[in-house]
Length: 396
Image (tube, rainbow, N blue to C red):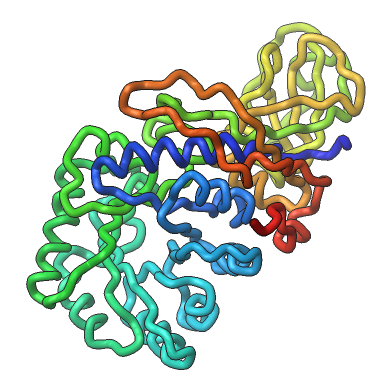
């Protein structure tokens, strides 16, 4: 089958989840496994659960609904504030939402009341990265209002760093979040079960410093790709190749290295300068910017990415390749996110035993992956729209 696809090794995802859960549990921190980069894949979610995550989180309601429709019973957290008109769907599929606006709190309260449930809220705090969250000076007032609102409960505090401005999690900002949690508990006479310090970018801080009140991290990239988002460097003991993009060749011809004729802007702005290097083998793979971030691809040895248009990935290869030959690429987070979202890229799953990567003393080796994960999960290539309705696991 020669269409673009992402091959996902579920055993490697389970391994990575287990390693991180084990590491952080020694510091009193639970892991929320984040599925948004895989379009809320139930198969990936189950691998994370098998690896020991305490709950699952996703920023898209559609993805959380797909997890519930697949029969996943783990607690689900909506990692982006819903709009007020999404409150009913949110309460129906998630047990906790991240919020920062009173109007959203009121909408969730009304939706929870109609369902006869209590919905948990994690109040997000802005600690420097300038994405979402209320300023620290406004936390107590909004928390007090939440505590007086029926059908919702203040389940915790959270923050997010290293996403917009690249602010690094540190002893200072994590200490500030801890102090705010203690302040709210003292002022409001309640207990906050969740103090969520952030995402995979928090790992270096969590390993090096005391956690204080932080007892939850929301991990996606580190579990899926085995790397530190702050540096994109591999994390010891984790697999970095759980995802592989496989793309067929559609053309491979000898061509000059510089264009002929007057030039202007290309399809995506000003093209990169092209240096005269004589004739090369220029190979085109059947994927483009509509489907993947070309800057986030790691090509196979001897192959380099020259450019990409909407539907063509232009490569330099050592020799001509026959149309239909498949090339295999590694992906960074941006490339993975876009490939998993594209309806033109399909997904296959595998779960096979592997020798673990080199282990460090701080990350103990994983036990054998669970039988459910090691069951044969190679499935026919499936368009993204149909994949939501698949069940890759038999009931135990």
